[in-house]
View: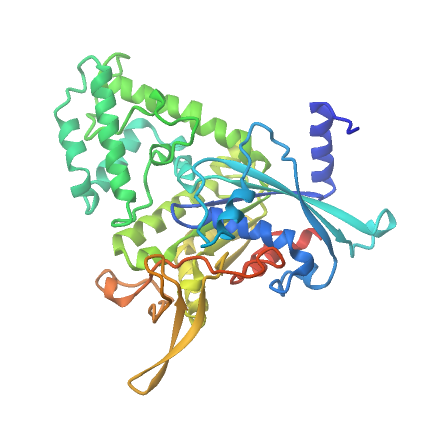
Length: 469
């Protein structure tokens, strides 16, 4: 009969494991449509099937034959929803296969990886070691709330006001701005008007987030991705205000006062508890970005994604001077920046995509390195759903990709375009230059016998976990 340990003993065991370098908390995040669920599902699948792995040549512990097996374990944080790997892999294994449903909140899964140690000190105690890997999945939209902790309500409102002076936000925010401009900020707050203003602002954010516009810098993050705990919660019924007078007085009852009070309450009751509970224990961070989406949307979409990620990483700073370290403590020592859906471009374009992402995040990347954090930039595909192909055009051999499109039942081959290494000028950002479409997952005869096909996921595993074995 299994002996259950009291909470204090369990916590002590967790601390011992972390002290002995036997536990890693890996945080996985990314903005909308970056492929977090697929990434985690494939990562778990690769490790569970590592003994039969033929697809992990750059993951040294597996390639050297030192893996002794991986098992899903009960998660340590029972109050956090479980990441449903079983459901996700079932969808990928279905007939026909389908992409798993994205998660809309925080979730967690724990793996125990048993391996043959090559550490001469540990061999005196046991030649077999066990590394516990806790993978925590959370929406990248929630990261966008972090900068709000340093902004007053007036400062945040001023930032949103400036953003709404430029297209496409100028047009998309028209209904919300028209409504707000008619409200007397000094009048006593009416709950119905507060709610309507919030709903119009939330609708505006959802339009910005739609595939047509593909904007990323959307605050507060919980307005578009509330999670099950805050869906339809009154705590989310606020919005920024336009052109707040400098001499505006907070009397506690006015429309302005109530909006400000709810904003501050959101920071105290939603943002701070989330980071305090989770971020203090993270060891490694991976940030996923669907850079290809911006190429086919607009220059505005690219600028918004770049600003959103850089704003978040600037808030982290990952060193003693960073906001998140000062408020909550942070021990992250490695960050992986990953451009996803690398199977949507031809193999010869992978270095270009990596260079583009690195240039996109150059400022934040330099700051992180300065703080002594190890970083890596990769282009990867957690599940590879295309194959390299070739065609002849005007007598020349052209590289293509071939796969089954999401819309349709016949495979197609296409040339998606050449990825630039440097940032394009606004006038060069034209949709006709690129041709990216969504593909269905591959049909595999033996999906449970080996890892899923991927691009460079083994490199990601080596960077994130390789030094722990």
